[in-house]
Length: 159
Image (cartoon, rainbow, N blue to C red):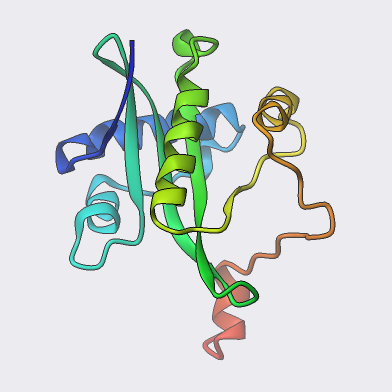
């Protein structure tokens, strides 16, 4: 039996553990610099930046989804952006990923969101096929840009 529940402050260590597993899967384990205090503040501080839900299979935590709201100036409505979805290897194929996506889609509809979006690595063909099977379509006309580190400081006039 799959249960999806909102995360609690007691889940911060679990969430960080799952984030690290996801980063390892995505071949970027060395990129995780988040700490439990940072995640706690981001999820449960005075101004939460994100939310998370935990997936349990037969009472055991086996996955999570971390998400936040974005906004479309074109529609005038907010959307739901899925930052991370992760299911442990032993639970894959049991419907946990589908349950997480369905839960977030329902949450998006309940909150009046007009979009539910996320990114996927180009090489992750299994995830791409899974997302397409759920009705998702790639945004082929768009390219994500990012500024970090020294480039961010320079752009901010501080470098």
